Amino acid sequence: MRYYNKIIVGAFTASLFFIGANAGVQSQHAVESADSVAVQSDTVQSDTVKAELDEAPNESSIIDEVVWIVGDEPILKSDIEAMRAQAEVEGVTWEGDPDCVIPEQIAVQKLFLHQAAIDSIEVTESEVIESVDQQINYWIQLIGSKEKLEEYKRQSISSMRQSMHDDFRDRRLIEKMRQNLVENITVSPADVRRHFDNLPEDSLPYVPTEVEVQIIMKSPKIEQSEINRVKDELRSYTERVTNGETSFAALARLYSEDPGTARLGGEFEDYIGRGLLDPAFANVAFNLTDPKKISKIVETEFGYHIIQLIDKRGDKIKVRHILRKPSVSKDAIDAQLAQLDSIADAIREEKFTFDYGASVISEDKDTRNNNGLMAREFQQTRTSKFRMRDLPSEVAKVVDTLKVGQISEPFTMINNRGKTVCAIVKLKSRVEAHRATITGDFQIMKDVVLEKRRQEFLKEWIQDKLKSTYIKINDRYKNCDFEYEGWIR
Image (cartoon, rainbow, N blue to C red; front, top):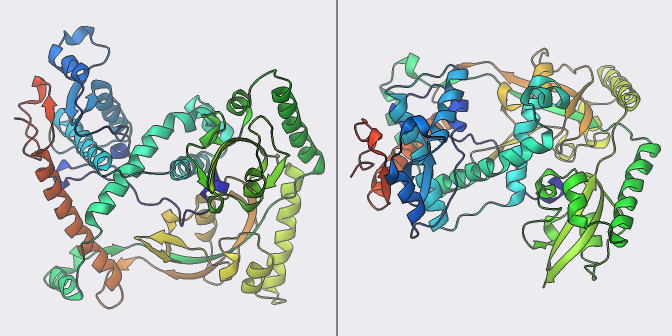
C-alpha cells in the first residue's frame, strides 16, 4: 500500500529483459510474460522434482510436467507453453527453434533468481505492490476504466493483484540481482568516442522526442455523506471483531482496499519502523499496546483505516489493518475540472504564472516544490525529460496536442497513489526526435556503450554460472542449438 511505499524513491520503470542478443526476441512484453519463477537455495536439490523429470511419461497423457531444472528450480511445460502463446498473440518471432529458445530464456532468469537467493537479495512487499499497481494502472489507462479491464480480463482487480504478486516479486529480484552484478562497470569519455568514431550516421542511436512537463493537480472533494458511509463500515468491522463474530484478518481479506495486505489478512509481512509509515498511521499504530483491541479510525491520504497490533520489537511493530477508500462522485469531478479551467484561464491572462500556481495551488506533493515540473528516475538519476511513452498515458495524450508554452484543458487521471485526480499541464520544452550527436547527446551515447558493456559482462557471467549450477534437462531438448554452452552435460 502506498502510504507504506512513500519512502521508495522513484517508480519502477526499468523493464525486465532477457540476456542473449542472439535470441531474436522482437517483443519486450512477450519476454516479460515468461518471468513467473521462484527462488530456492543453491545447495538444496529436490529429489521429488528430479524424479518427476526422470519419469518421462507418455506426452499424450501429460497435464503438466517438469522439463528442466536449474539449481533446485523447475521449469514446467506449462511455463513454456504460456510464453509461446503470449508470443503468438503479440506476433513475436524467434531466431531459432522456439522449442529451444523459449525454455533457455526462462532458464536464464532462473539463474538470476538462483543467485539472488544465494546472495540474500530481498525485495520489500511495498516494492512488489508498487510494481503490480503500476502495471494495473497502465492497463486501466489503455482500456479506459477499471470496469472494462475487469470485463476484458474476466477477473476482479483484487484477483489480478493476487495472481500477479509472485511474478512481479521475482521480476524485482531479477532486476536487483542484475543491478548488483553490473553496478561497478563504468565507461570513460574516450571509450564512448572510440565506439562511435567509425560508425556510419545511420547506425548512431536514434533519440526519440523528449519533453518537459509541468502539472497542477487537484483532488475532487469527497462528500461528507460518503466519508460517513466509509467510517460506519469501519465501525461495524470493529464491532464484529470485538463481539467475537469474526476475526480482523477475515474482514481484511474480504473488505480491505489495500491489495498488498488484504491477501494476508491485512498484515504487513515484516516488522516496520515508524519512518516507513504515513505519519498519521504511525502515530496511532505505535501507541497501540493491546493486540486484542482495535484502533480508532485513522485518516491518511490513502483513505481511512482501522489497525490491530500483532507484536512490537524495539522500535518496530507488526500490525494488520483494513483500508477503505471513499468514492468520488461525478459532480465532484466536474466541479474540480471547472475550477482548474478557471485557473488555466487566469494563467493564460497572465494574472499569475504556472510556476506560482503549481507551487501554491497544486496538491501534488511530488511536483509542487519544483514549480510543478514532473520528474522520473532514470538509470539511478532523476531527470525532468520524458519520452512520450514514459509519461502517464493521460498526460501523454494531452501533451501531444500542445505547443511549447501552451496550457492544456483540464482532464482526469489516476495518480501514482491510485486515486482519481484532476489536472492541467503546461508543455515546458520539447526536443524532436533525431540522431544522437557526441556534443548534444553525450549522455545518451555513453548509456549505449555502458549498456553494451553490461550485456557483455552478464553474458560472460551466465556462461560461467552454468559451470557451477545443477542443471537437468529432459531428453527432448538435448539436440537443441542453445546460445549458451553448459546446459547439456
